[in-house]
Image (cartoon, rainbow, N blue to C red; front, side, top):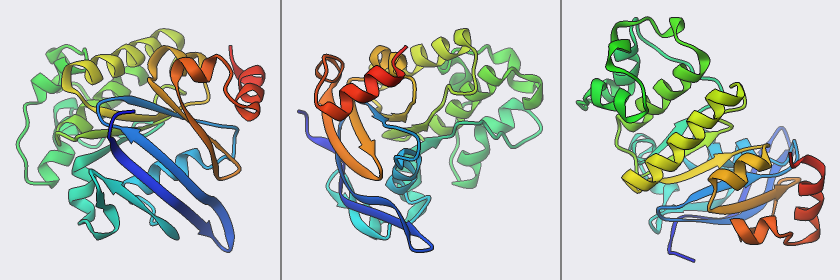
Length: 237
């Protein structure tokens, strides 16, 4: 496997004495697309938020390029490791303002037209109000907003779960294209194993807050380990 862009060791997270992550170990190679899968309640979204410290782990370590994130300035970390959420929340009176929102907060300049085109949308949408766009278009605008900070890693928490089939495929194609053209390291959470098979290079499996293993895509879908096979037989479509 390639050198890890992100390495997680013994990651734990608890709320009110209830452990959600129970010692997760995982590696995400540079320039690849890693899917994080597992049953509901496995801790997938919590894991993703721990990587760029949207929540602070109770114990364990996360490394980006070998540097412990615990010692990094959180704003610098989040510029380096961007995040796209399940439901797009766009701020600003226009699409252009929404795209540049985070960049302006960080004191950076960015070309909103170029970013819009990068995610496959026409520049004529820049003046539109964000709420007039379809949910699929809004999600692509949220990806453009994350790209405005020029991240090296993009974390995506079920980015297509609220979309219809056509919009889902457009976002999947966009993820592959951004990975190929920009060399972005990408990590996404998904319940849709057919999507994982289409998009991911590697798969990390979580169950009950623990890491159950990591596989290349082909190895995972050929049936690697009892828990992986149970997951596949139960939810693959």
